[in-house]
Amino acid sequence: MRLSTRGKYGLYAMHYLAQHEHEGPQSLSRIASVGIPKQYLEQLLGSLRRNGLIHSVRGANGGYQIAKPSEEITVLDILDAMEGPLALSDCIADDRCCAKATKCRVRHTWERLTVNINRELASVSLKDML
Image (cartoon, rainbow, N blue to C red; front, side, top):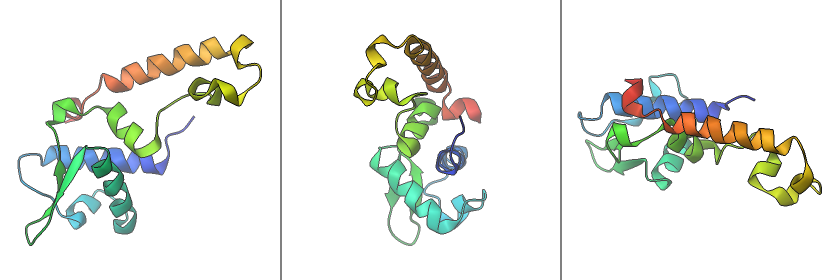
């Protein structure tokens, strides 16, 4: 299991915005300075905005800023916005994907691991990362 570039870059961007939480909107160029290609960053910021984690400000001094205090945004919130819900197996998200999902002896293990990983991701806020 690996986190995609989308998830990593989304977390990098949110971490940057949390670091500058009280400095007003941050430009795309400033956020990209953490090593994210600008064109890709625009797509990521759109997903974060649609999920209510950031908002954009138009105008000469515009840019992006987090939409809630950093202690209220978790790593799980960010990864869900970037990747969708985390599930270690397709059958955890949708038991209709496999004919034996309801009687599979391994599914319970995948489910337990998924719950624990999500719980851990939800326990880490952006503020914790600063």
